[in-house]
Each structure stands twice: as structure tokens, then as C-alpha cells.
Image 1 (tube, helix red, strand yellow):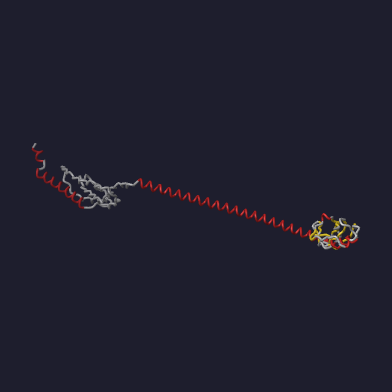
Image 2 (tube, rainbow, N blue to C red):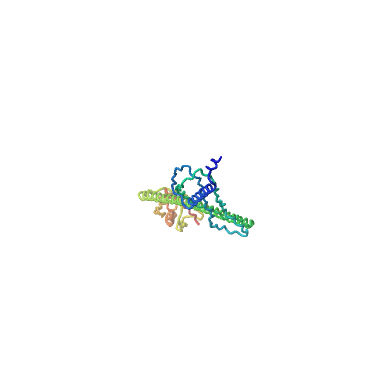
Length: 318
């Protein structure tokens, strides 16, 4: 009973040991907070290390102010209150609980491991968008818009009508020009044909006349004609001769038949008695008086010819 009491540590020693342990922990925590951790922490083999608690304070994220876009000014809509920027709640630092342990044996303090490097994180940028003001539709005068639309439709219809009229007019003018050109062409062809036919007829007539003239000139053979075929150009003046009245009685009639040679110009070249009247004075007077006349030239196949005309001349004694 007494030996057990003697082996137990005294209260002073226990209190001193506790104070030492707490002080060591406090120094360790302070060193860890003050120092930065290395980029590559080196793991060290710790034999029964004491419990180490590291206090890390997270950086507060401050909202970044973003320039607000100007919304289109629309009247008369009243401006709405701007939305408050969203701010992340700041985390509270975690307090490390202090754990008291009763060490079995006091161990010499070891070198503290280099504290880990704390990587500072960039605060997240929170973009705050300006509240979009709904664009108010402007009031439109529907009646004015309808009238404008109708006026535009009328204008387009009028333009279309004018274009169609101009197109129809152009087409009609083109048809008229084509018809006029065709008529001119046909008229020119007809005139050319008529001219050619006329020239041909004139040429043929001239050739025929020339041939007939040549034949007539080459041949002066007289052609016999009757008195009914003869046409006086200027008839002769016939009167009973006074010489023949001495041997005749009043009321007697003398008929003499004459044969006249008429040249190609219608003149009388010669007169002969074919059948006498019985009175030589009458026959001679008839031959002389007939020569004073002239015939229209006799023609055969359109060619003047020499003709023989048998003509009976009658005289009545006064």
C-alpha cells in the first residue's frame, strides 16, 4: 500500500508535464501558420508523432464589379430596380479543438516538418448581368399603316399596268412595222413584176414592129382591101363635071368603079378605072377628084402595107 503511493508522480510533476506538452503544441501550430508549405511536401516517417492540427483560413472571395451594359432607352417604361450582385457566403474559420493527452513518457521535441505551401486560390469572378428591361412595343397607328400599304399596292398596280401597256404598245408597233415592211416588200415585188412585164411587152412589141417594118420594107406587094376596110383621113371633094352635062340629061346617074393604089402613108399613088361609067368626061373627073383625098394607112399584123382599094363613085346629073 505504501509502496504504490511512493511510485506515483507528484502533482507538481504532472502539472509541469502537461504545461510542457501544451506549450509544444502551441509552438507547433504557430510555426505551421507562419511558414509556407513547400511545393512538394516530403513525407517523413514519424514514430508515434503527436497530433498536429493545422489551421487554414480560406481567402474571402470578393465579387468583381462588372460594367453594366446600357440597356436601350425605352420610354415611357419606368426603370426597374437593379438586381443585387450575388456574393458567395464567406466560410468561417474552423477553430481547432485542443486535445489534452497524458503522455506516458516525456520525449524530446523533434524538428518540426516544414509546413505545407498553401496555394492561394483565385477568387471566382461572378458576372452580374444588368437586368434586361423588356422592350416595349411602340404603338403603331394601324389605320395609317393600312393606308400606306394600300397606297403602295395601288402604286405598284399602276406601275404594272403602265408597264403592260407600254409592252403591248411596243409589241403592236413591232407588228405594225413588220406588216408595213411586208406590204412594202410585196408592193415592190408587184411593181417590179409589172415593170418587167411592161418592159417585156414593150420590147416584144418593138421587136415585132421592127420585124414587120423590115418585112414591109423588104416587100411592097400590095394587099387588096374593100371600100368597107378603107378609112378616109381626109375625104375627097366629088362634084359632077360641067363638061359631062352637055351630053347628059338632068336626073341621070353615072357610076364609075375605080381601083386606087394606096401607099404605106395613106396617100393615093395611082387611080385606074376598073369599070367606066359610059361617059369619058365623068371617068376622068372621078380619077382626078379622088386623088385629092387621103386614107389612113392600111396595116396587116400591125405593119403598114401597100393596099389596093376598089371604090365606086356615083355622080347625079343636076
